[in-house]
Amino acid sequence: MKGIIGRKLGMTQVFDPESGRVTPVTVIEAGPCPVVQVKTVETDGYEAVQLAYDEVAERKLTKGELGHLKRAGVAAHRRLIEFRGQTELTVGETVTVEAFEPGDAVKVAGTSIGKGFAGTIKRHRFHRGPKTHGSHNIRKPGSIGASATPSRVFKGMRMAGRLGGKRVTQVGLVVHAVDPERNLLLVKGAVPGPKNAVVEVREEKAHSRHHRHQ
Image (cartoon, rainbow, N blue to C red; front, side, top):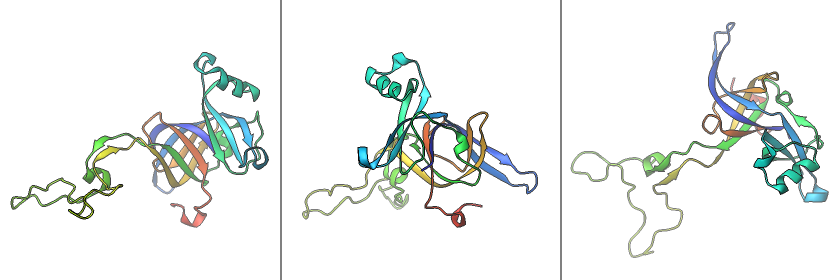
């Protein structure tokens, strides 16, 4: 399982002078991410590799976090994220953007942009009622259940509430270009989160070459 942690810098376009195509890409500043721990079925019950990201001053971490990092010979980092699956990495190695190549199918996980309290039309894509003929149901949710039976509203009813600000994984993306000198990954398409959001880039095995966007 290939994976790396990065920061979304924003979106731009890449122009191909030969074909004349303009490709929308997201620029992700990823790594370098030192390997802090390698988990195995024998010791932990599952296989995973733990990577560190965003180096900070030691005073910003707890003693427990510092001890965990120093045991692996890694400097103080703000974030530790696990990537599940088989790996050939060992503790002390560093993962860089060179682990990926243009054309690799990837999925990117992050925290989506928080949109605050939103109604059912925006949050659940409900249809609105008619605006004319004395209708009072313009942007209201409509019926939320029957009357005497069951005399209550079922759990899970789609209503207005907080929208966004949750973990989202965007699948079916493709690495457009890699810049090892500046630790940049250019991914074709959009990824979750605002600018400067921390994102996790993983290889996507489910999307074969035939299903990639050309």
